[in-house]
Image (tube, rainbow, N blue to C red; front, side, top):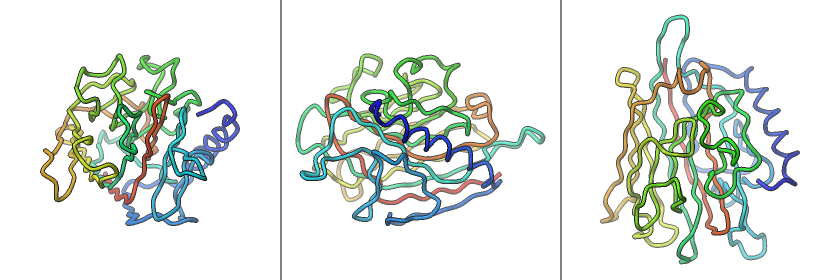
Length: 268
């Protein structure tokens, strides 16, 4: 996010404080499409927006519709999700599914990607999170796990120096308090037509503590991407309650990042 957007980020952060009044042990919501004025959805106010029944995570040129460089955006559900209970030790299960598009206009390489994240309610989203930091990590603290309280599934479209040496670049990763993923898998998005609709399914099982990811393109011959890794949310977030949402960024390279539908359910 550009420095000129710091005030908007502060408004976003202030809104997060208000979320403490909207807490529930069990939560379920479903957005089959996105429409302006949608309730219970928090946007960062500058880059993320809703139009054409889609949630746009990074800003585009209003005249050409093309992605802009060095941008980052956030969107989150306006409500706190309880991931565990300190008193009882009980941990929540959760499932989320969403459809998405990434449009590159046929340009190679492109970047940088988007995430689905779960963050502690007091996590301070940085304003210097464009490029490879995917809108959720700050350039100064991205590799300092003690400075972050966020778990993200990254849909990373460009290979930075800290990324796995996959070719082509796109990959799925699980990030635990650091932009350096603890687990990765190849994501063959560039084998699909530009702007093809992808589907992601992310599940967490309290008994196994496994965070599992499946990414596919319906009616496609491209292989399904699967990934799983054990995550201790109590240790990672240091908070019983979490904010759930999406982030995205561009850098010198660009692309668009749109969420078309979103379902989420948790139970404790």
